[in-house]
Amino acid sequence: MQLYSTNNKQLKADLKEAVLKSLAPDKGLYMPEYIPVLPADWFNNIRDYSFQEIAFDVCKALFDGYIPENDLKTIIESAINFPAPVVMLDDRHGALELWHGPSLAFKDFGARFMAALMSYFNKGNDKKLTILVATSGDTGGAVAFGFLGVPGIEVKILYPEGKVSLLQEKQLTTLGENISAYEVAGTFDDCQALVKEAFLDKELNEKFQLSSANSINISRLIPQSFYYFEAYKQLLDYGSEIVFCVPSGNFGNLTAGLLAKNMGLPVSKFIAATNINKIVPDYLMSGIYQPRPSIATISNAMDVGNPSNFARMNDLYNGDVEAMKKDMVGYYVTDEETRHQMQVIHQQYGYIADPHGAVGHFALQKYLADHPNAVGAFFETAHPSKFEDVVNETLGLEVEIPQRLAVLADREKVATKIGTDFAGFKKELLSL
Ligand SMILES: *Cc1c(COP(=O)(O)O)cnc(C)c1O
Image 1 (cartoon, rainbow, N blue to C red):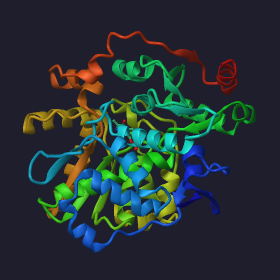
Image 2 (image 1 turned 45 degrees about the vertical axis):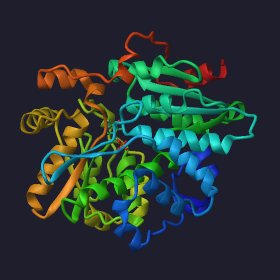
Image 3 (image 1 turned 90 degrees about the horizontal axis):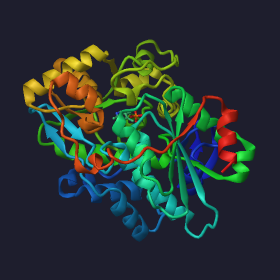
Image 4 (image 1 turned 90 degrees about the vertical axis):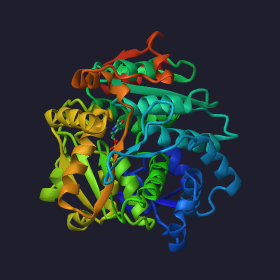
């Protein structure tokens, strides 16, 4: 399997290099050179396939023999080992629950698949792999669980001080073993900038074999396409004009959907739902891509002012905003609307949505109101207990915290405090 850089299609890498390096040498993002289309027969029979079978078939087509089938099977079975159910709120609106993994967020899919793939590729290498990851909350938790105890791999997580929830922080800072945390006095964008700079730093690259776990890594993106097929399979009973509404920050999830569509999945529309950090909805309106500093919201995993996967989306459409608009529509949702929507969902359906899911439901409802033949799912990207403060306060209840998260509450936080300047971070890393 060959991939190219979004900055230069002539700059190529194979899958192993793309996974281990994460970013192309010219700072572009890797994209598969060839995106196969699955046969019509396969789609006709999709109801007969389990989620793991779907994941295996999609991945096999995409990898095109790069990893032997037996090994690929093992990778899929270890990574994709929890379900992605669509819970229908009524006969047109479904919630695709992506939080059934260990850290209770959709990022478990990407993190587990990446961990499985990286340890597969790093087998027989005596140099340790150091994973640097910036998180606005959920990425870090998923990566921490995904890599915990994986031999030969160290994980360093950067998160913005005071901007992640208490239980999110516990996931980053209490697991120990090969997982360590840096608490940055800044925003998520600052964390991301530090990581990006580290990858380009000569000294750090000499000392460490660096790799990333952010959504820029292609191995995060690929497994996120699997559940579009899985959700499509479940939605077929409700209609044939199927839309997906994706609450988005760095747009990894949405880009994975575009990948699925390019593989033949008949999605009639993608709805790009954001909070007030509405860079992409604005782009779809104006054709102008205008990154801005991020603004803090209650759906904080989407507080992104310069979505990293925009480069991939742009690449898939060759920079043609009109073409993108045929497949995608943008909505943005304010905090006030988000809270109100959480209440509406709870009152109407007895369903507790987290703030990100509520952003998705709001946008889906708007879209479906104007498209009477469509049915769709919004992505419930995290379990509501991951944002328990907002959820409890907005709904006037106490959301139950699943056991696998609750046990972390009493563990002691261990994190290194750093500033936003790269020199300080570098010094900290070199001192190890
Ligand atoms: C990461 C995250 C998002 C945003 O996903 P992207 O792929 O970055 O667009 C949305 N909701 C939750 C809960 C998240 O953790």
